[in-house]
Image (tube, rainbow, N blue to C red; front, side, top):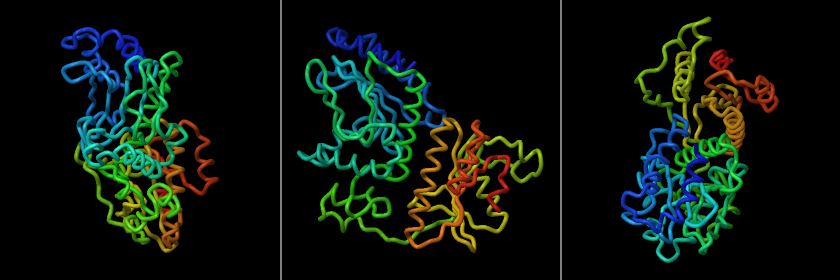
Length: 374
């Protein structure tokens, strides 16, 4: 349980740092068992990431935190580079800090004496890139202190949450926070790439000139002007685990309707294949980053695909994304004809279909795939 990790580390760390580091049971717990517990609580789609923990390098941490982090291997495999979700355990504190942080060593090297201001600016820009998580997590600098003074790692969090050891939420909430933070991390990677840099992640398609000026100053505006055209490219089928797309989508009747799609990418590929075989040209766009869209005589149609693991969060996020994508595409002078939210399985809450219809979105599931053609 994640709560077990929190309690053991925060309760034992203040005393154990006075004992030898080599072979210490708590140090070993942080690097081994605690990492395994966090990984076990992680959704399957994120388990290919690197999971690591540290209580020090050859000796106990002193003015820094013990930590457990999760790394997208395309960004980094260690805490000295890039950005990543990390649990921080300050010494002599009753709080655990969990958030998407930025590597201090790299920031100090890149920005010199202004590194703190730089990563704070980058954090603000990143929040504007993935704004939907602000209802779940905190922004700004964590106001966290220990009994011996301020904690070291309080700069540059894109989003974060503090957990009070003496008032921990239920385990289900801890697990859900982990999944949603990883969703935010994944979305930020898709929109910002391997390196967080304000000059690369701010764009007028997503935020106004006034907001850019407020964050970076008017002198920087020219660096972030991008074309107002809506760019598309032909849909590229992803490489699946079995290196092929499920074949039952080509069949009709009961076989087709009983097809179970347990992979976001599998469902996405099947939809693109259906469109291809019916004379449409499925496409994708880098900004906004659509799963699939295609053009008809009436305008552009957009599909957002979601796997139903955390149904409430996924459906709500999908609605928000489609509204955002529709606005962005329309603002570039295009007509949006229809929006579809495609779920990889039937949702438990039957009311979703009516809710989506009320905001102009059509629900697609494995049982009504042909509706994308209507």
